[in-house]
Length: 263
Length: 237
Image (cartoon, rainbow over all chains, first blue to last red; front, side, top):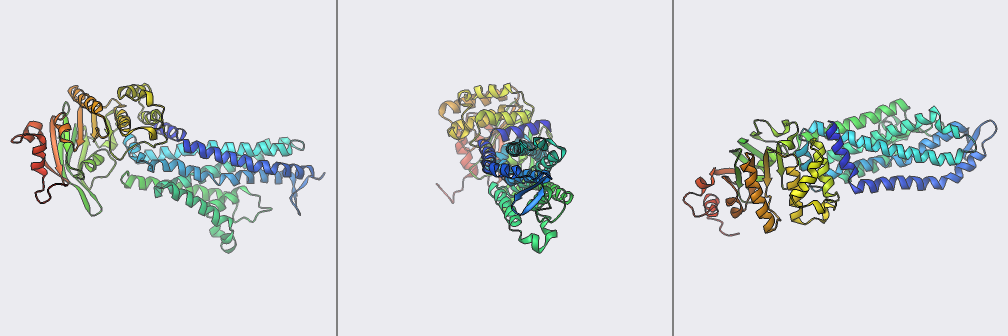
């Protein structure tokens, strides 16, 4: 199993499009955060003596809580693209018939899908940690004169942990969908569709219990501050939903890989 | 040893292979000969675990391919329709394959030199010619120093020097007591390389035996082949 995971990691790390896509995601994240550094710094400068901040005009909040919420939200916005990266990783097998070579090398399909999932999760974990690191660096620029220690508290790390869990689990969902469909494009479209359904908030208003079962809605429920966001479930429920999506799609991907001919 | 027994493969309503049986023995090059679409590649894909058999068995040393622990150390294969991602470098393609079967990294360098790709190893596969792509596939097949080689149309795209090299290589490989199963539709190539021949047409084995047995009564393998597979109702192309 270790050798299979190592081989799959090598596949990921030697594919230029994965590097390019990772660079684009991280670069875009930094670019978006550069725009908000000044606004965040101004909001921090306006923190009242009793620790209240007004990040959104007319919405005063406890400063520490609000800043950590903002930190999680800033990671979440770029974390939504992680499943696209996963789709590109999984989809390489279906280009130029590489799947045939892969199955020749690792014919046991159960072992193969497990190795692929572990390697993909490991790479996405690295990307998620980098996204969280970039978010923290830019937030440090905003809070350094007020309370820089806030970014290394247990609450901050809990927020990062939730984000990393979301990124890896939603990535595995994108990975599973791509393998089931045998198409990178379908994996990417599925990711965009999930984002669109949640961000329109149509389902959240009409059927919140159903909305809470969607992956991107689960991400919001897991990461965002319920004080200023309309959420449809608690973080525990959200984590279970993300685990279920990742588990079911990866398992179905394994079953389809095992039952179909390797074409 | 490769043993194919009563093997059938259907893709939906289409039967690609019907009750195919033959054996490829150690120390011999077995030629698997048939026109395009005869069922050669389908048979090899089932043998190598890529496609599931509809009926029958295909065994390598008495085991299914997928049950081999590190299959590339037992069987090296070059298949049409199984290739590298074009953006990856040749050396990286071989590296992940080697890692998957715990094959030492030095073998990557060795096989690249063996097939004459050492200078092109760091180039992207998309920049390779057809012949270079074939050489890379052959390098992948040889990585695990397997006792069995299964090659599907290995001379496609090779220049005359490459064809001569592969013919000698396969002869030497079998002479060392190893098994070679060579699929091709090129008669002259097969007659210069194979010890045994299996002829397949429209999914069924029409004859098999030593090259001498199959060509007995004919001037050449080509003549024997068309006598066995020819369709008088459809002359020419």
